[in-house]
Structures are given as C-alpha cells and as structure tokens.
Length: 279
Image (cartoon, rainbow, N blue to C red; front, side, top):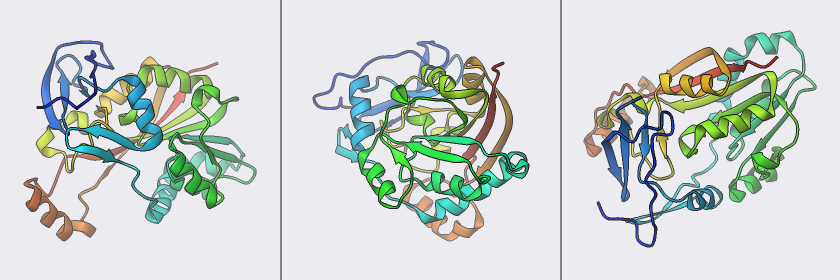
C-alpha cells in the first residue's frame, strides 16, 4: 500500500502490552491496522505523528492516499433518546438516590450525550463537556449545551462521573490518557465508557469502513478491562448492544450486499461502568 504523501509515519509497539509482534489485520486509506500477537489488540501501525493526530482532532480532517478524510459528521437528535435510556438503566441506583453529582463528558462532540445526561440527573447536578473540535463546540454552545474546547490537561477540579463516549479508538496512548482521567475523577468516582468490540472480531465481520486513521485502536471487552485495571478502575457493569437490529434489516441487507459484507455481524457496541479504586 502506498505511503501517505508528505507524511513520515511512526512505527509503534502495542499500546496495551508493548509487544512489537503482530499480524496485518486490515488496510484502508493508505494505513495498516495490525493485530498484536501477544494480547490481540488491533491498532494502526505505522501511524501518523502525534502532532498530526492532535491537529486532526481539532479540524476533523485526516490525510490519506485518496485525499482528505473528513470526519466532522453531524448532530443526531436520535442519539439523545438512545443515551438517555442507557444512562437511566446503568445509573438507576445513583439517579434513584436523588443526590446531585458532577459529570464531565470528554470528547463531547456535538453534545448529544451531554443533553441526555442533563435530562436524567438529579436536581442540582452539574454537567459539562470538553471537545477539541471547534466546529462541534460552536454548534453545541449555539444550542446552549455546556461544552468548551478546554484541553483535559488544563481542566481543574474532580468529578463524580467522567464519560468517554466513542473516544477510546481515537486515543493513541489510552493508558496515559486514563491516568490523566483518573486525576480528574473523584477517588471513588465512576468512569463511563462506550466503544466497539472490533478488536475481538475479524475484519470481514466488521460491519463498516474503519475510518483509518481517525480510528487508531480497536479493542475487545477484555482489552478495555485490562486498560481500566491498569489505571486503577474496577469494572462494575458491562452492557452490550447489537447494531444489526431488525428495524434496519432491509436497508442493512442491501448495503451489506453492495459492499460484499455479511448482513449480520458479531460487532457490538459495549458500555463499561467502572469505579476508581481510590480511598
């Protein structure tokens, strides 16, 4: 596969176990995703330099062999109801207790998840989000959603809950990122994380394009739990959701046929609720 024009890619070890032993898992947009032979994590290798990754997180534009890959997407009203249902189920005890608490959403995007949290938390709770992409921040703030572009490294204070909704796959060093997250989480606070299980299935079973290099890492449930444990979090609850549901069967079958992929997939969206082991 051709190298990305004008970019010197970096060879790395596995972001979870540091092994350099791997097999090719997929190729897309001039990038290669490999599967670690040690722990099974899937990651882009070689990858763009960290400076390029940081710049792309702010602009939503990545360089590929086929030209620019734009991943700004758009706001989805349907996500608010979906996330409200998830939060009400996985935080039923905290919501029922009625005690106000503080919640930080990291990588808040257009703010749909923050809107859902605002709708279900007990009275007096505080909710805010941080997002590096200015386009998304401006869109959210125009609707009155409390999202800012302040980097996590410059954020002050601790929170009862910190959420990472579909953020995991964009982070080049998730172990270091979690250590930073832990510093902003109450000593016995909660980390709420959503990501896919792409790292535990074959590429042919993955239901869509990979969006390399916007997505840098693909984990399975065991990988996420290993990351959490290393950072001092204990998993309290895990919930999986299928994406190949009957409500979209006809559209999915047609799309899968055109792209040469199976209409049903073992791919799952997975939610993790973990608590920090602080004193």
